[in-house]
Length: 221
Image 1 (cartoon, one colour):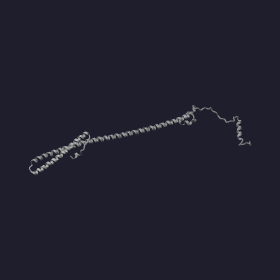
Image 2: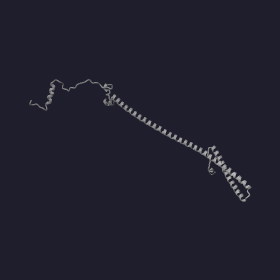
Image 3: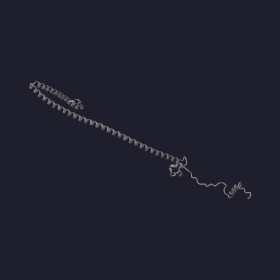
Image 4: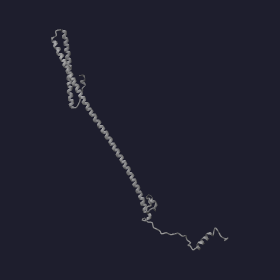
């Protein structure tokens, strides 16, 4: 035992001991029945997480391809739903904006038409009131002219009668001057009467035609 070589002969001794036991000199490995894995194999079933199906199966298998296709399909459907939702929301926003704009335009147009109709009606009312006022004014002036003419005519007749019977030259001249003044005044009143009569005729004619006429000359009557 003094010749025992720790380093070099230890392996040979171990090998000799194994040989002496009668065991085979090769490595022992247990064997199990092999189960072939096919596309229809139950081992290809889903693991409960379809999102990772393609990661849990051998690359290139039919199930993995189908899982990947389903994943792409789900992504496409989700993207399509989001796109449809966005399009629907955008379409609704456009329709709402268009409806609001049409309502605004309609309200403005209605307001404009109401303003035009109000202005037209007010113009007609003011015009009618003005016509009535001018008619009354002209009639009042005509009545005043006729009263003045009646008074002047009465004074003129009285002065002419006295003029025929006066004996004094001084009184004659005074009465003669009075008669002349009354005649001038009466003539002026008659001119105003004729002018007013013409204006009234023109006014009535203008009313029938739906037009107005000038009244500048009436202010001096």
